[in-house]
Image (cartoon, rainbow, N blue to C red):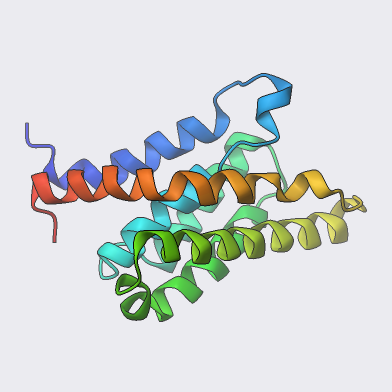
Length: 158
């Protein structure tokens, strides 16, 4: 069996598993946005294969797995991946560290969208803890980028 056609779906499924994996409460507030990071990499690397549609389906799966209102993560992921897909040629030319800063800003946008939608639906109030995953996502981006780039090059995905 060849792994090549399943590399992108397997990486997204791995990100979904990492997103719901149990963690201690002290570490859980810093959990990176694994699905967003993996989708961001594949959108920048292969925009013809991973786009807003894949982000929507991943968001629906994330909503089901996390038990949130259906569509919240889908809307957030779709908006962020749309912004990323519209600017992927420019972002590919930046260094990995500059990309990490941009990914951090996009992660902040994602969390603010999630907060606004949850505030409209459930009347939840903003806490600074909502933005802690932005820091961890920014820090993890370079290593995840290098790992997924190595996978993409070894499997010769295009």
